[in-house]
Image 1: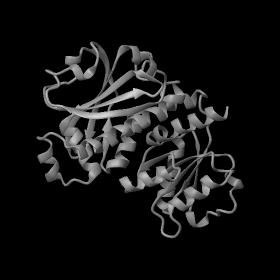
Image 2 (image 1 turned 120 degrees about the horizontal axis):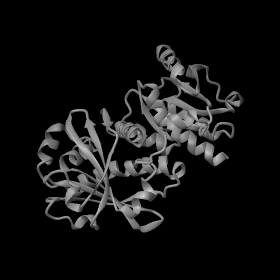
Image 3 (image 1 turned 120 degrees about the vertical axis):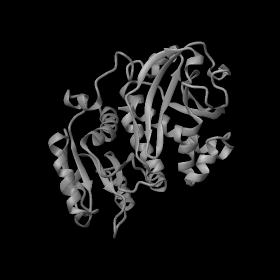
Image 4 (image 1 turned 90 degrees about the horizontal axis):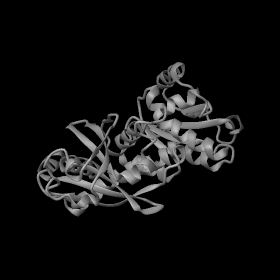
Length: 322
């Protein structure tokens, strides 16, 4: 669940196809965290309720440069040169923003659903000799989750999360450990999330038809609307809608207009809102989130992607209403 949500949000942020595999969970000494001797980028995070609990994102410097460079709009030629050199502060900050997204997704999915504490990025740094200099891990043993990381245009890599055993139960024990709970899609079927109506505001008729075809494999009911037929002054028909998906790129009124309309009305302001686009640039994603959207999804999408993006939002809202 986390891997799909993070990959989807990261895709929207950097603008290329991203895939995270299911994590492999193990234990390791500090010298076993880094898979090879190449330089790494390290992001230290902390439980916001307990300064003693920290955990660490670990990626190769090459991958960190690639992600940070994409966020900054670096040309590929510049990134090739930068992968072999220490990262400057600007590039470290950009990669820190990527990892901040990782912790934001974690908090969004796990804080309510698993009663886990909120987490946040403390600092991002780089380690030139990770196997020789292991003091940066601040401990003798760690629980480790390794995600296979596939980034369009970049060789396959690994995203590693290392956390002290004392913090493992609090943050990940039930989420990704051997006693992991059922997936969010399964929890919907079992009644943990109540099925609801989901509205897609989409101008293209063919796309609306494709979205409606997803309903056979979707636990929620789908309702597609042409934006030209949407009346912002009459929202009573949407009183029971659990979520809206709004196309960002519209000709007359913008997707933000619809977002602000729905957030501003008492009838619809409690619904989950996800913006969608075939071109989800960093600027679009940031503007959408600042304006009140819960998330952003790239089109086209399949049912599994809708589940991964929507169900955590519905779970959080339904739990807060109960």
